[in-house]
Length: 384
Image (cartoon, rainbow, N blue to C red; front, side, top):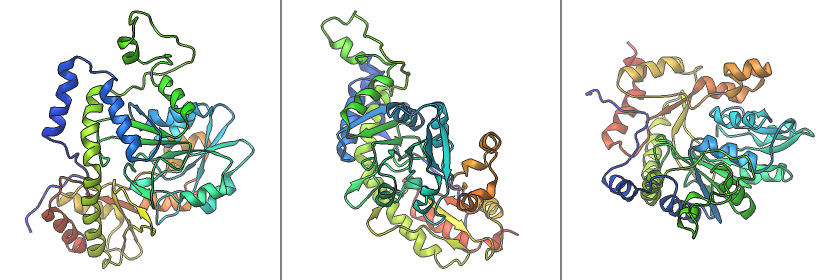
């Protein structure tokens, strides 16, 4: 079998995105403006919310969401112990404290059964993460903590949902990423969603230094030479119109992207389920997976090699892999700051040690998927 080179992810972009980017470049309006506004409108429509606010990335989206909900010093925010570090970092940016909650190892999402154990008189909010594109159990989470402010970290979950409700429509605020590893991309970029007009207005001001009106509103107004009022402390978290123009094109392709990924995810599951040392993803009935990543669990008690050794073999054969993500409580900064031991969160610890993402993106062809499956089925032979 001829060796192939298959990256873990590759954005699916081409002439349509290139042509779209030309318009703001040649118009001269390249910062946040009409293209961002149109991207926001279309994103809100697709995710069944009243408002969408574009920002520079999902980390800044999380930061603004927490600020808009008045999270600050002395407050505690529940976050899953297995997620990208930015989920917890954003809480620290506000002077609040992230309180880790263990995950369900099969879904990789926050375990509802562990939430109540972590609630204190200082708990003000919760950030469920829709990891790898699978929504957390939002019905159960809402039942357990109806009194808490809720921010959905949907960095991986644009287009995902439960029954007829899209990710980003379950909590007070949803946060999304358009990093190149996501199903749609603007290079970098993020989006906030909400049904609450007061939150949308506040986040819109916070992303633009706290200005009372946007640059576009000012420039198109009767007196563009009059600077706006700045009555709150804000940040420069804007998205550019170049990114917005690309985002419009990508968003129109999103459902087709996800449909194609779904097809190949099913192929993976059908083919890899016969390998006794691999656990394939589980999708609850009624859930629409966004398939940002296809993440397996390696059962090292049954496997011929350890997880990292399997990744070494795949790398040698041109197949990129990654751990699903990391257990934040095990990262040096958090372990030292909060004196947390790895085994305090057994689900997150196991996911950290045994999860493995394999390539799944819209630039792959049939032969790539077949090559990956064949290599995994013969991993013990190929380790020699």
